[in-house]
Image 1 (cartoon, one colour):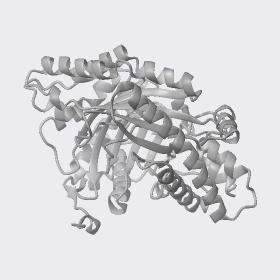
Image 2 (image 1 turned 180 degrees about the vertical axis):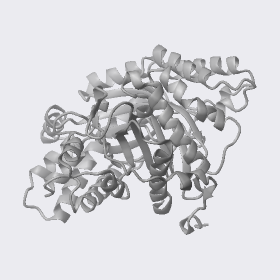
Image 3 (image 1 turned 90 degrees about the horizontal axis):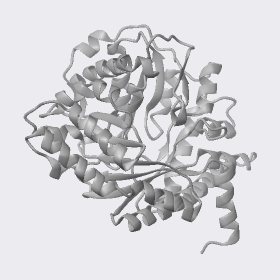
Length: 452
C-alpha cells in the first residue's frame, strides 16, 4: 500500500529529477497484411495500424492526467517491413514507408519503428530491396525509424550486410544533409536485436510477439543521480543497493502505466523496459551518475567498472519490481542526448575507443555518435563490425547509431533539437579498414552459441 511519503517522493522525482515514462509503444503484427499486390498490402497495413492504434495517443494523455506522470512519447512498432514486402511483385518498399508515415499522421504518434530487416545469417526475399531503400525512406518521411540486425550469438555476423550498412548510413546522411543529417539518427544497426524493445530508433515487433501488445519504456537517470548524490560517503556495494531500490520504484511506476494502458486499450501488456535513457535536460544524464560515484569526468579510468555496476543494479531492481521486464533494460550512453557525455567529449576525457569499451557492460552500444562527414563507408562498416563482435561474443544486444555530419569536422557541433539534443563531432581513426570490409562473407558464430 502506498503511504504519503511514497506519493510525495514520486511527485518530487517527477518535478525535480526528470522522472518520466519515456514511451508507451504499441506493437502491431502486420503478418496478416501480406499480399502480392503492393498497393493492397499497403492499404491493409494502414487499416491495421489505424484501427489498432487509433486511441493510443488519447489513452496516453488520459493516463498522464489520471496519475500526473509525464508520458513523453506515444509510439508504434510493426513487423519488420522486409518480411511484409517480400511477397509483393512490385519491389518498391518506400511505398510502405509512406504508408507508415500516413498511419503515423492519422494516429498522431511520435514515431513508428519497423522499417527493418533481419539479416544476421543472410539475405532472404525482400531484404536487399528494403535495405537499399532506407536512405530514401528516411529522407522522405518524418516519423519513420529503421533498423537492421546484422549479427547474433547464434548466427555470427553477416559481413556482407555490415559492408552494405556502412554505405547505407553514409548515403542516409548525404540525403538529409540539409536537415542536420537526421536520416542516420533514425537508423540502428543491431547485433542480437530484441523483439520487444519499445525504444526508437530500434523498435520493431518481432514475429514471436502477440498480434498487438503494449510495451512501456521508463527512464530516470536524474532520479538515480539524485539518489547517489545523497550518499556521498557510501561504499560502492551500498551505492549498488541504493540504485537497485531506486530502479525498483521507477519500474513499479512503469508497471502501473503499462497495466492501465493495456486495460484501456484492450490489448495485452507486454514488458517494461527500464532503461536509463538520458535527455539534454540539466541533470538527466547517465554520465553524471558515474561522476557522482567518484569519477572526476566520465571517460576516465574506472568508468567501465562504474557503468557495469550501474547497469547490473538497474536490472536487479527492475526484476524485483516486475516479472515482465524486457526490451533492453539498463543504461543508454548516447553522446548527443546526454549533457554529461557531451561535456566529457569536449573535455577530452571521453573518446570513441572508451565508449566502445563501455558498451561491453551497458545495455546498447555506440548510440548517437556524430563523426566527421568525410568518413568512409568502410570505416563506418568497421565500427559496426567491432560493436557487433562485442554483442556476439558476450550474448548481449549491441547497436550502432552513427551520424556522419556532412560538411563538418572533428570538434564541430551538430544540432538536432528536441530529445536528440546536439552532438560534438568525435575523432575517428584515419587508418583504413577497407580490405577487411571488402572481404565479405560471415564471421562464424562463437562457441557460446553451442548451448543446446
